[in-house]
Image 1 (cartoon, rainbow, N blue to C red):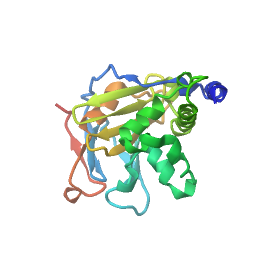
Image 2 (image 1 turned 30 degrees about the horizontal axis):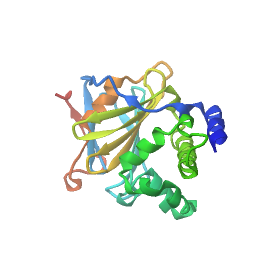
Image 3 (image 1 turned 60 degrees about the vertical axis):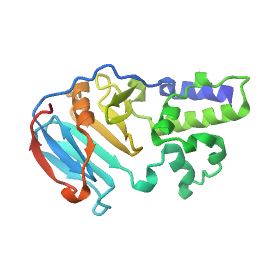
Length: 240
């Protein structure tokens, strides 16, 4: 397992990357819009028109939606159903179609931890954390987490990973907008619910900025489902 972990590191060098604290918390004040989907509302710093793509039918409280802006930005929002909010490792074990129930014994106490802690355990596992002469159970779990990391976060991880902490939410950013055209945001609120936001550009000459991503993160919050339609949008002034 020691050598298998190092082989994984050579095959997928990005698994050596671990989250570093986000240092830039600047927020874009560009004119934008406020969007609301699946009980969540947030602002984007882009005022251009956009096209929406989503499944023809889905529950009001969960699902996915892709927004393609005329100014060249794409935003993909995923809100898991309530039964899939237990964490990435719990989902792997409990998904009957994957037939990975035996991993319950490998992950052990990690499955009792929050969804945030489960993602943190995956992202902070690297080949160097696996010792040649350590306990076999620890090595087995680390190699498995390393494999999950390589599969679950293949895009953007090589350009960097960051942990962020706002007063009402925390999470991880996969990808550096200065180096990658696509950035994945794993957002967890204090109640343990998680939302995934993928931001990208569809123009070679265009790059996202950290301030734009922070605008989305800072303004993301829950709203009562009965107070909005799933696709309600309205023009919005810059945040305070």
